[in-house]
Every structure is written in C-alpha cells, then in structure tokens.
Length: 560
Image (cartoon, rainbow, N blue to C red; front, side, top):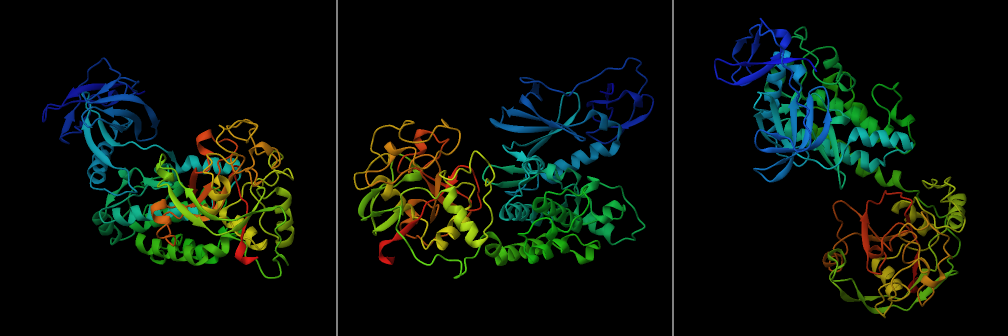
C-alpha cells in the first residue's frame, strides 16, 4: 500500500491522512474541504485500513470480517453497538486520497444515498470519519450474492435463467431507478452492483457514482462538445458515456438493457454481440422488441423513463409468458382414452387436514374431498419419454444425467408447467393439496403414509442416504394401506394449487399469491424427517426444475 502521512487541518482541526508523495504540495481536508499545504515531514508513516475480526472502528463498530474490496475501497461486515445490528462498512481506498474528487465523490454518495429509502435499494445509515480521518459509510448488511456471481454459476452450469426470473430481476432494478431518478442517476449499474437476496429479492448498490438529476439535465442540454469524464464501468456504459458526452437518466436505462440481455442470453457486453433471438428459442418477439428499444444507440430512441421501460416489459411478459413457458397440447397429441391402470381409487370423504404445531401447516381442520383416482407411483422417466415422443415437448433438465434417467426412477427437473402439460396429455390432473394429503394421511390421521412409525431407510428414501432418487418400487414398506408408493421422500411432488396459507386457501381458493408460488408435497431424497410427514408442504416458483421435484396425477371419479 502507498505510504501516507498524518497532517492537521488548520481550518477545522481534523487529523487526516494524505499520500506521502504530496509532501510540499497542496491537498484538501475531507471534512471542511479547505486547502492544506502538506509539509515535508521526512519520515513516511504507513497506515492500513485492512481490519481484522474484533477490531473497533470509531468507538462504535466491531469488525466481524471482510466482505470484499474493489476500486473504491474496502467493505467489512461489522456490528453496530449503538444500533445493536449488523451493518456493512465501506471505506474509501487510501490510494484514492491523492485525487481531490475522490473525497467529494464519497461524500456525495453518502448525501444522496441517505435520501433513498426503497425496498430495492440498499439503505445507507450514516457517514463518518475514522480517528485517522478516513471517510466510511455504514450501510444495510445484505445476506445473498451478487448478480455477477449468480450469472457466473449459470454459465458454468450452462443453464439459462428462466425467463420469469430474468424479467423479475430486471423489473426490480427498474423499480429502484424509477424511484431514485427523481433525485439521482446511478451511472455505474452492472451485475456487481446488484444483489440477489433470499426470495429472489433484488437490491441495487452503489449510487456512489450518481450525479444529481438536475446537474445531469443541465449538462445534457449543453453542446455535445462539452465533455465530461467517463464515470462508471466501460463495458456497461451507454454510447454517450463512452464518447464522453453529457449523460442523463437514459444512460441508466441503456445499462439495464445490457443487464437484461445478459440475464436472458448469459452473454456479457464484452462478448461478441449475438441477437437475443439467436441465443435461445424461448424468447418472445415482444420481449426482444422491448430490449432492442432499451439498447438504442441514440438515447432519444430509447425508453425515456424507467417507468415506461418497466410497464412495457411487464406487458410484454404477461402477454407472451404462457405461450413460451409450456408446451400446448393439441387434440391430435392427446391420448385417445383415459385409463386408471396403475392408479388407486380413493373414496374421499371428511378427514383432518393440516397440523397446528407448524405455522405453514395450520390451522388443522376437518375438510371434505370428492372421490378420485391417484397414480400408484410418481410419473417415471419411461412414462415421460412416451409423452416426449408423442408431443415433441422440451426435454427435462436432467434428461441425460445417468444418475437421474433410469427408466423406473421418477422423472425430475420438471417445472410445474411441464408437469401440468403432461397431466393434460394423459387426460388427468395434478392433485390438489387436499387430494394429495388425503391419499397420504387417510381417514386414520396417519403421521406418515405407512402409519406413525418414525421414518427409516426401509420405508422411504430421505436424509440423502442414496444421494439421488430411487426407483419407484423400492420402498414397498412405505406404501399406504391403500397401496400408494413414495408419498414420503424420494421426490417432492407438484400439486395444482397455489401455495397459500390455509386460512386463505380454504375460504378463497381462487386467490393468486404474489409471488405466484405453487405448492409441493411429500419431501424428497435429501429431506429430513420433519419434511416428509403427511402434512408437510412447501412453495416454489412454478418454473423451478430441480432434481428433487417430480409429480404424479389424479383423475376425479366424476370424470370416469
């Protein structure tokens, strides 16, 4: 690290640190902004801002570890003793102290970012100085990963993000900008500055390179010959930024277009450009049109506001999503007849559903279910292969995985839409949660499908004991008294219901939750014992194509 020395500002009395190379020259106080003539001090004193766990900062923060470091500085996880919460501390890099604009930029970041209070923008709590005179920000601490890391993993796996995920992430970024653009432009948007939190929530970071909107607009109205420095990351900069022309909020919208392109294609701006429709075959032309307008070379041809961009993308997604998410079964592709072969008849009636001991499974109530037929086994790879051959449907995610494609193993890597399409082709339905639980629990109020004996590897495939799905006939001891296999462990099973609290699902079953999760039942091969009871339930996005998820079908008796 470059040696730095301590000097006292005569205007405000603050002790600050400056690069030793500026001895005998003029620097600036980062507190009062007054000039300081740095004396020739001879001995250079080095200072580190690399902290270690347990170090104290500003008599308030206890360092818990480093989060990362980059061009602007270091970011640490810390405990704020005053607020009694975990925060992130961002320190300006010492090497930037020789640039007068660096301190101004950092102060501006704090002043602007503290104004921004939005669910999709990281909250800035405070700006302060260390005892040595270094500026730092105290910010909201986030548990998650950067969008850059997520994209890197997708590239390694050679797996496209589902369109819904890419659109959802982009819409959240646009929501953040729609709010922030009232005061600031970001001007350094990139996947590194977008965090993906649990629940697929997005937070935009680092409005530190933002310029007040008023200043941006005034510059944009001047002659293009009036140049300014390129602020931000070159690969994600707009054409006007790369040309060092004045820019405004539309530069951010261009960058969002680049991020959307990368989310959908897994190709970064530094890769040779390939039109989006040539990168994958499930992109609708309307989504492509929205993207192309965002990436217009001339900003007058782009979306003019984040709101315009967001509404156009939402409308395009809603109008084309279903057609691009599932294979539509035509009458010529449907099975000619409906058969109850390899199905068990359930007489229906009243039974106890739910479990008051688990919030997600309560309230426990007596409910009524109509008679129905249910598959003895989850749908197998062999059965799904017949469906693919008959319809030319998309291959499941793990179709070529030798650990997951045995003929008698349950099919996995299937989205809810794909499972539902198969059921339509077979002349059946996905089970409701009520039907599924009745088949597993019966009128005897069983804890597990086989009874109340605790689970073991004789009864079911759970706790990762095989490390993969077993063949569907393996656990005969775990079948229900009626003869239905694998209702505990092996694979979680899609149901046709949305994942809603029972208090809503039973009184208003037509409710569509936000987000629109679908309910799964039964646990899977790596679930613990608490997740394979007859009442256990989980909600996932319907596009999920995991190696732990399969399905089975039912036929209402009244349709036979």
